[in-house]
Length: 119
Image (cartoon, rainbow, N blue to C red):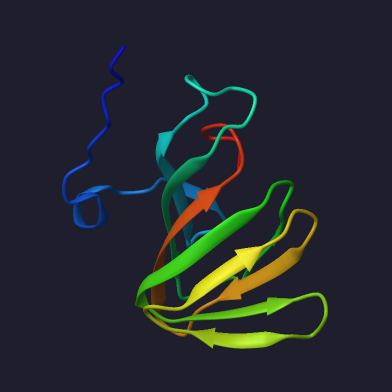
């Protein structure tokens, strides 16, 4: 039995993630495998942060991000701090607490080992 792929043309420029926290943090899943693989789902989408309140997030799943546009300042609980720019890739292990901020805005693509909209 053939299984069809899913295609989201120009998602980086057309998908608008909803507001999830504060006045400036937007995140939304574009796609998820939770319906076809509920035991080991992965979800992917976009995270946008605008200048303003930092977002502090504790991950309850493993996630990876690639920075697409703008700039983020990303720090973890160990004191590690990075200025992230387009092309940078991050792995955030389950249980890590990460602080995201930006001097202007940042857009990132993520994939996480979780069900859709379970961020």
